[in-house]
Length: 120
Image (cartoon, rainbow, N blue to C red; front, side, top):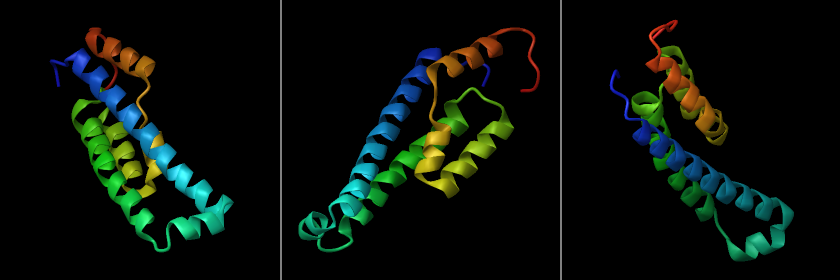
């Protein structure tokens, strides 16, 4: 990964940020609605279909996050492995652990451009 396109890294990081935020809002709104207003929730959704839709929405987002971590993110191999395992086993919490922060990405890219670096 010698030639890193910075704009591509930033674009995918922003896309992943928005997807994680959107998914979290949907997940938490369903959670608050089901426990805060159980009668209204039962009247609106009489079966477990919304849970299946929310899980189905989370699968492509998780797949995109795994792809981002393995192919695009400028980080060490051990960090990539830990983040992928978190995504696979922790669900929405793993997504927030993988949440790309732009200032950290900028620092990692600067570190990769410098001639002196510890590790890969």
